Amino acid sequence: MPYLVKILVEKKPGVLNPEAKAIEGATASLGYNISEFSCGREFSYKSSKSTEKQARAEADELSKKLLANMIVKRYEIVSVEKLV
Image (cartoon, rainbow, N blue to C red):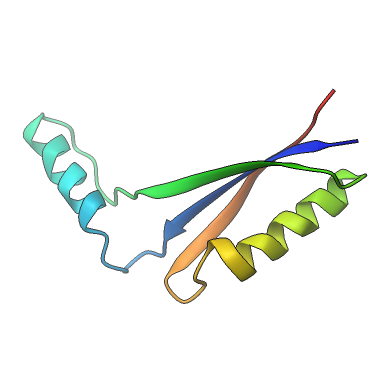
C-alpha cells in the first residue's frame, strides 16, 4: 500500500537564518509580537513501502542521508498517510 510522506527540514536554533530574521523584523513593523521565527522546507513524496512503519523508517533514513545536513539542520516527519 503506498504512503504519502511529508518531512519538514529547518535550521537548528542558533544557526544563522537571514530569511527568518527578515520576516521576524517585518512582523514587528506590522505590530505582531513574534519571536524565534523559523523558515524551512517541506518535502513530500509517495513511498511504495508496504507498512507505515517501513515508510517512516525510509523517511528517517532519507532525511538523515539527503535532506538535512544534521550539523546545522533538524527534521521532522510531519505525516505518513496511507493512500487509497
